[in-house]
Length: 273
Image 1 (spheres, rainbow, N blue to C red):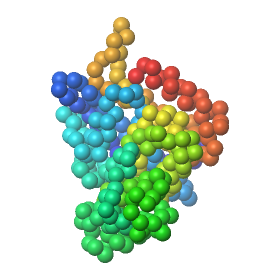
Image 2 (image 1 turned 180 degrees about the vertical axis):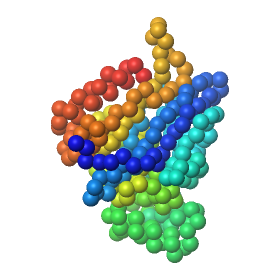
Image 3 (image 1 turned 135 degrees about the horizontal axis):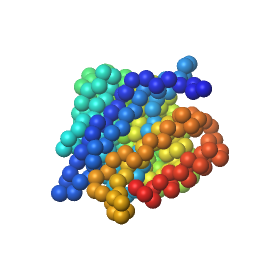
Image 4 (image 1 turned 60 degrees about the vertical axis):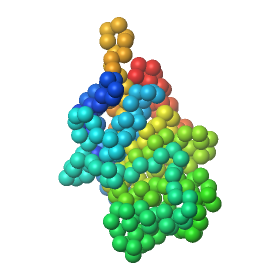
């Protein structure tokens, strides 16, 4: 018996299609992220978007964030759903870009003021996020004085200052050793549990890390004809519901046979994407 309920859709891509320079990049991409509710728990959503290099993940990433528009189709966020616009979805790039000449607190305050908050509202919200992320003692430091993990926390908090509950992360595990990857997984789980509507979409090549932290995984790839030739235009080829498989919200999951089987399943599927 499942210990969760599926609420309304809070992020949707509907028939997203994109052609660039005569190349068909995305072909009717459909995906839905629902508000997942667990009685007595605060549970946000963590979604993994996986696919081979060059398949169109970055283009879909930018469309989901409202940074680019598709040729057709739409991305809707929230309940009730609204067409996504730039600024509604936070974006955390691999390098965790912050203003080097501003303190941690100033970076967050600026993001809040650009989102329309008053000086007082921005300061109060910034201090709240610093406290939630356990870095309030770093408020007066500059980005160069932070560790990589601390910069990542500030970058995520910065995006939540202006974008509400929706966050896209581009390759958050890239170049990290196993201990650092585990730290990032722990952080993402922590962020998800801050608010029921917190929703993170992680674009990554790291299958194991994605399975460890996500509750749902989408595989982006292209169809093939009868001769095995790739048909241009990527779409969602598979949905892997880790909640239904009992693999979400578990500690030390990477040591279980079920985890290894899902990772193996995805790796085999990658060869056909």
